[in-house]
Image: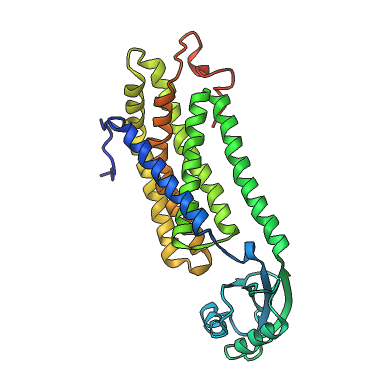
Length: 322
């Protein structure tokens, strides 16, 4: 007996109220942008600057105990990560402690570093500081610019790829869905004031790839059905194509969410922000591939040119493998 989250054949009408879906998406994007400009993001150490302290002890690293000891100092955002290296001996237990820059200072003061050391000694008496490195505001500002550029270039590359593989209407639909996903993800981080660091940028780029994969699967089926059912309207072809790929879309999303939810619950604080971004991204990415990308395509329309062979129905690049 096979598990089926969605029946093999479905006949949902996804475009009966497509203008409402687009309007709802536009409203959510406006709310996300207002929150971003009013509240801003709760930037982590990567973007605000701070100090990284490496410590070593013969005792096993207890991240929770380390955090509990340091939290009493009131230093703000603190990230603790255990460092694993095959060259380390059994008595070499290394941890990396990252502390946000304090108000009016580019890095954590020597006094604060000493306080951290003394606090950690209550947990591991033989602990010692290996190195102390600081990241100033200038470097953090450059990281922000680089992160924005990385996301923008990824979306631009997608625009070119879809344009070459399909037609420009498909490209605009796919890019609109990607922008929708990125804006809503940044918006939820702004609204909830969840820490935003380089790991979240990695999540955004992963979300772009995941959403694009869903959209391309739907668009491939649309292109096939446009040639197969020449008398059907574009809305009917889109509905048929989405229904035919719905089982695959839902199964992929649910299995991905099961893994991500497990990581969110059991993975600890270090990866929780990244995993939350991925969970949100999978949900909005699945939604946008059906209700945003396809609705944009329906609004723009598409030229149905039957003079071309089926494997190059878009243009000379349309048979490039995804």
